[in-house]
Image: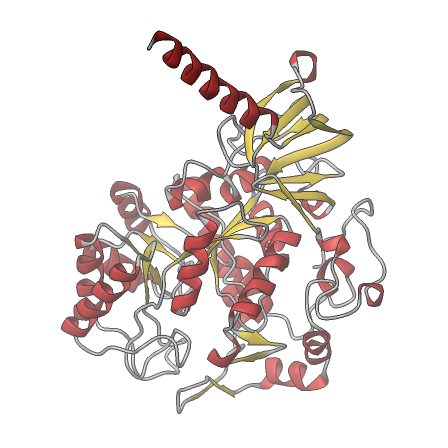
Length: 476
């Protein structure tokens, strides 16, 4: 009997040893680590990635490389955590046309790969997902993804006849009971959050979500232990939603300056500015986008998108308006007065940061005029324009966003976390624009193509110009 026990123990040990020998280990050596927490950068470091997770990070002098490890000497390069975008919409566009029919698994995956190419290794989709996106998310969580990780709000809450959502995906509601039923349905699907839209597009749409409905949504979300994120525009709505218990805002207050009452309420209740979407407001204010010749931008969008953005028709639409919102019988001037709106958003963001409100980083990229991956870099640049340091902007897009998501496995560089990493040629702490100098991207330890190796919907040779070593230029 004793012999059998010894044999079993030896067999078990052999399995452990065999498993260890089969472990996949890659080491990034001689890098400067910016860990995403706001701590000082660490030059002369190494990162050991084993089976998709960070096994060790520390000084090169203390490195003990496992046998068989792949060692990549990246002398002079900088490594930061993968960027997390806390407000996106995926798979809903064909060039510049938005329609639910384009939300297919193939199109969603194409978007997620573009996000990854830009170093955005995780995204939170706010309210426009078909059910298959949740299935994709579930599969990701059982594996080591090679595209951006998904967090999903499923189908968000839109008022019947009102603003928001994706026609054909989101099902509009009109009563508190319908609101509660919607939340129950989304919770049963396993969504990560609940999204609601409260807006009338600067009073151009005659229907806006009522407070009775929004209150029911938030209350029912909390009954399912889910947080509620609201699209808002007006200061008064922001205050009311805080009274109702909202957990975060998906856009900045833009109708007027935020006041001390709102800031105090947000801090007291722990309400997050989840995504300020400053880059969204900037895009809406530009008749001609100044990055249309920038390879960092052009590589990540389709030829049809470029043609449309460069057309005189778009310039005319921006300057003159009005346009019709899909699914609604109302015309509105989408871009009217948007230069004022973007400056108001920037000022209010600055006020929230100075007041100590929890602020993440999100872009609202995906719909027309907002671009997967590209906008995340623009968003961080705009944050720095408001007075944040590059370190603070990086923290907002990494560990702060992971804290909002409630995911302790991503968002910073530390042992035990997923190896979601962006390797840069130049120091982003010297200039936040250097987040564009992407030399490599890893998701769960998997090396994925960078934007400098990407040419969306074209042959690779069709994209020319630019490289990770060329200094980026602020486009505005």
